[in-house]
Structures are given as C-alpha cells and as structure tokens.
Length: 59
Image (cartoon, rainbow, N blue to C red):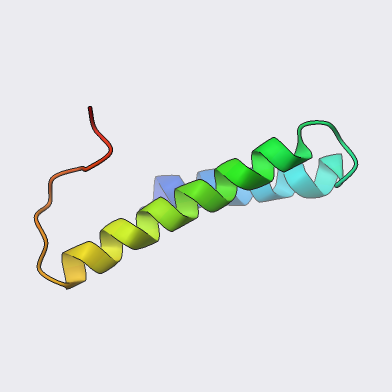
C-alpha cells in the first residue's frame, strides 16, 4: 500500500480510538477507513490479475 495512504489510514484509526465508538462521527470515520482499504485492495487485486492501471474511480 502506498505509504501516504497507509499513514492516513493509521491516523484515522488513531482518531477512532481517541473519539470512541459513541462519538457521532465514529461510524462515518470507520466507514471511510474501510472504504479506502477495500478500494485499494480491489485495485491491487485487479493489477495482480493483469488489469489496466486506469483508475476506475476517476470520473
């Protein structure tokens, strides 16, 4: 995983620990962390299968 993305995910996870699960933005932050991780994994797997380097999320 790109170091910048990994660093952002680690920071977000640390914020989640600081905020705690009863904070109003916790669910949103957890969803964003999971979405970024899932999107990266999807792209990584696609590349390993020989897919193009085009970003399918770019509009």
